[in-house]
Image (cartoon, rainbow, N blue to C red):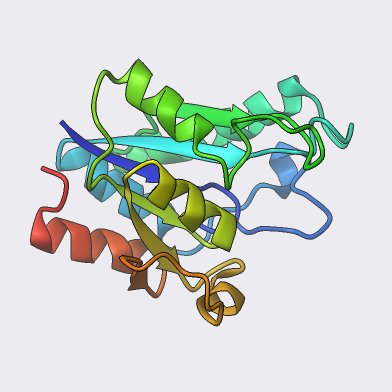
Length: 182
């Protein structure tokens, strides 16, 4: 099975310091949906793993989050793309859960649900916590320069095997060219 794991805010859609709280605030980054569609058409399973502490903070509820994900799916459909699953950590940073990135809990749940190992599975993020969770789960971390990616790239804590892409479209181009994860 060809599997890729994507962070949401800053990778697929525009991130906001004020949180993306409503479907009207959810806007795809240029080329991101087309990139996901290319993966889908090439037989990849596309999974999203996203910290959503706005739930714990009361900025939005599960219905609003589901509506944002439905909007993403509806925009992907005419392009021939799909998100096979959304995995979300609903906890705040002080909740000491095992699913909030940089902990690898969401990734372990993805492996369990898809009955697969995550060794060398590409996982794309824009923050250090994304990359650390990827690496801890055995994935190959990919850093995009969208969202917080430019700032993150300057960190001296990047996992050793981190790969780089300008944006999700660039990452997908590289992955499809190398047939990584297949």
